Image 1 (tube, helix red, strand yellow):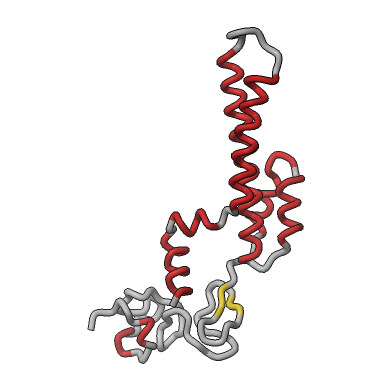
Image 2 (tube, helix red, strand yellow):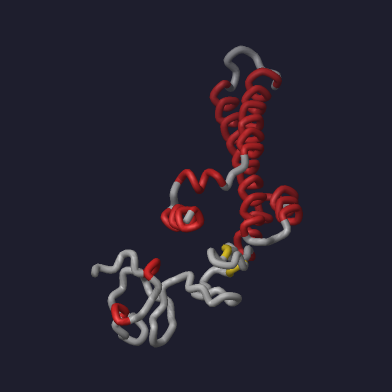
Length: 179
């Protein structure tokens, strides 16, 4: 049941779930980068009183935000690759070492779909699977005639026009159907 709530939170864009993808070490590193660059631009760089104050504030904010964002991005990738069964060290290094964020762009272009588990037998399922390939457990609503995916609130199949109310779909997949 917890997996159903997690999947629903993931699908609806729950902010708490989204923030859990950024690890604490990444948030702390981002804060250290931001504060450290403010300190560098305001106290360590040589300047006379009031000279170019606006420029120092702008540069400190810009570079602090840029490095903090980069740290948060590296943290996000480190968690996201594990959900997708990809090599975490390889992708985090690519994101950090490739210049100008090219590693992050490449990661977002080639990343694999999120892997979930069958609630019945714990087999890994790729995104879009309607049935578990090991135990035939139905994981998503499908039409009983053409076996294509349908929305849980559909009354008729959008592919073949079949009346979905006549299907013997499992009760867990008819939760929103008016009876």
